[in-house]
Image (cartoon, rainbow, N blue to C red; front, side, top):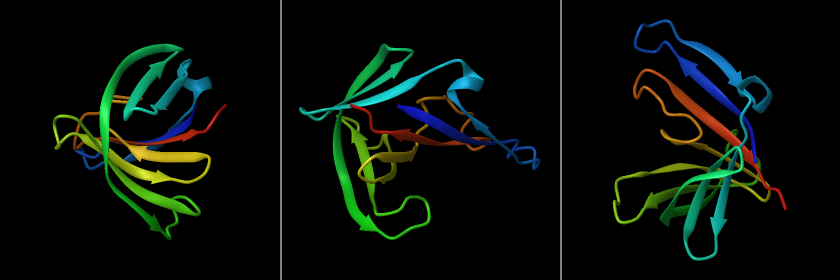
Length: 120
């Protein structure tokens, strides 16, 4: 379940601003579902937007300030080995940057760092 996204924008205008987006501010809910057969589903307001087959390319234990006791990961979408996203995951939280979910970005001019928590 999506908790918040840190949004940086105005980068191309050299006027960087930051904001935190939450479900209350956007009137939206987002979820990621990792399915057993190597598939991830992207869900908005309880409606599946799309699913993709995935491959984990990197899964390394990292000491970092982004997330305690976390593993760094890179996920590639099959069959295109050049699309996907990277981030950090621990036992109940995932943080990642992906241009396409939950928000589409103006690449190079803004960015989102998204935080989701595990639900049952």
